[in-house]
Every structure is written in C-alpha cells, then in structure tokens.
Length: 264
Ligand code: IPD
Ligand code: CA
Ligand code: CA
Image (cartoon, rainbow, N blue to C red; front, side):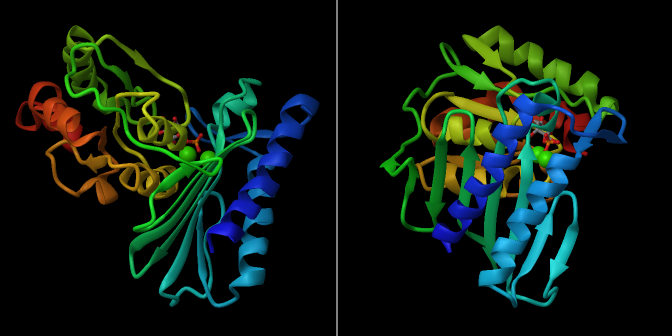
C-alpha cells in the first residue's frame, strides 16, 4: 500500500512541477483566502483513480472531492492533492502531495511528496519513517530557547487571531525564530527530520495532517492538541516535535486555560 501511495504521489507531483512553470491554470476562491486550481482537481482525480484501481473497495476522502468510493470501507485514503495551493498559485515552489491511509480510524500509511526537491517522506505504522529511503528521526533539541519553530497564522479563522497573536508573542519571545512555509504536511515532515525543532498550528484539516502526523510519530515525535491531549484529530490544533519540546511548548507557550480562543 505504501508503494501504491508513493506512485500516486509521484504522478500528481509531476503534474504540479510541470504546471507551476507552464502557468495558465484556473484559480478560484473556495472561501475567502482559500484557493483551489484546476491542477488541485486534476491531481486529486489522478491519485483517486490510481488508488481505486488497486483497491476498488476502499474509500477516499479528498480535500476537493470529499468522500468517494465505498463509504462503508474500513480503509479510507485521506488525500491533499496540493498542500500549499497558495504557494503554487504564486509560483513559490514549496508544496506537497499528501496521502494517508487509515484503517478503522488509525493511520497505517503516510506519504508526503515534495516534487520540487524530489523528496519523498514516508512511513508505515510500526516500521519507522524515511526520506527518500533513508531513516529519519526528530531533532533532539529539547528547550524552546534556541529552537526553530514552524507555525502559521490563522488567516482562515480571523476570529482566532487575537488569541493566536498572544501565543505567538510568547513563542517569539522564547524561541530562536519561526518559519511559516505554507504547507502543513511539509511542516510536519520537517519536524520529523529535525529541520524544525517543533511545529504548531491551529485549525488544520485531516488531509493536511494525516500522513505527516504518522511520519512524525514514526520518527520518534509526538503531536498533541493545545491542551496536551489527542484532540487534534478533531480540532486540527496541533503541537508537534520531540516529546520534551512539546511539553515545554504546552507549558510555556500554549498554556491552554489562558488562551480559550485557541481551543475552539
Ligand atoms: C494549507 C497549508 C497551510 C496551512 C493551512 C492549510 P492548502 O493547505 O497546509 O500551510 O497553514 O492551514 O489549509 O489549502 O494549501 O491545501
Ligand atoms: Ca492542505
Ligand atoms: Ca490542498
């Protein structure tokens, strides 16, 4: 299943890499500041048909197409055909194809492919994670002091901005610096391989984090919600990194009871 996921991610990635140079794709605003292009739809169709060809009785949950296939299946493929659509539209070469497979609600396979760097992050549950076939591990930096932390501004939930900015002020006061890349799945993978010491964001959707969270976990990292629990799968509020830095972020930055707006 990992092989098929990688093949589908590479096929979609090739389309993304070609189209970003060619241009001429259509852009629509699904909601304010939330873009979709015909390339997103084309890539999702390519991935879905490759997966359904091999696994006819599985379900697909795609960002653009919703739930398709056998809706009663125990197996659900969770797909983000372009994670980083805004970057793609602006010609900024930082986005990825994200494909996760869940069995009875547990993620068992995850693939995140960056077509611009030809980087294939992948993981199978219990078998570790790799980047282009080489095992990866989370960074060992444990303190917020000196840490590089990936994050993002809640531009699609501006009612949360005040609470986020309070969190951000605490963060930037304590860490070395932050990064906002525009691709949550790559952010998780960068935390998984130590390029970031930690990553936190709120309001993610399942297609943003399903594959990346398994890759992070199989790299020795953890992901929690802003209160330290497993609720991120519902809220999409995620704090991730090695276990010690996550504990430090929860205690010194997220401090959930004082940031009620974050937890909605
Ligand atoms: C977005 C990206 C971005 C994150 C947003 C996501 P999209 O996904 O992952 O980094 O901050 O929350 O929605 O819309 O480009 O697939
Ligand atoms: Ca996404
Ligand atoms: Ca997307």
